[in-house]
Length: 214
Image 1 (cartoon, helix red, strand yellow):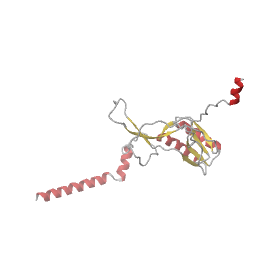
Image 2 (cartoon, helix red, strand yellow):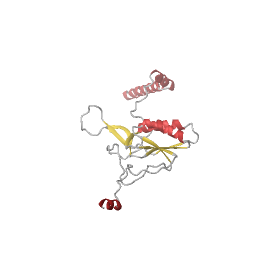
Image 3 (tube, one colour):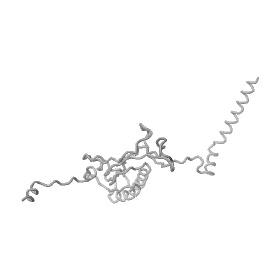
Image 4 (cartoon, one colour):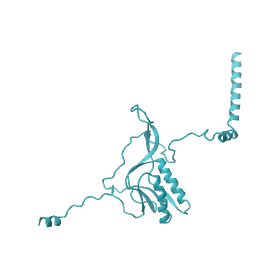
């Protein structure tokens, strides 16, 4: 008898709870809640961006250094897909938020041009972690903060095509203020840049040495 009473009481409580939940979470009640408190169901996201890898081998990574090509490599220094490209003149670590700002600005600028296209040559796939202010040293690495990518010097980061040169330059001028490095606009067919762009010193020839000795 006691078990039957407990089961009936449990069923009644469950029915009342399901009815209350269904009435509370109706679309009209949710909409009224959002109207009263716009941020009630929204969770703040720090450094929000549209670019992030689907999966990585490790959750965290070392800080690392910006690569400086010194072996004569010209990879990524020329326009490969579009007609105009944005080349960085300094090595830097660009965040996903900065790349998102550049991407959105370029898309907004060139969407009025029929047949225009855009390519992004870099992607933020390095997790960057940080600690809060006034936190003691040690006790492990900090928590994940944002995604970033290491961009070497003279690397093309964005390319566009299907428009006049004046429009392309104006679009790249607008986005150059979104990233903390110096940039330049290059066209398809421009010569590649070897390494950091420094030329080796010219060795004196044998004729010059013989004339000085004479």
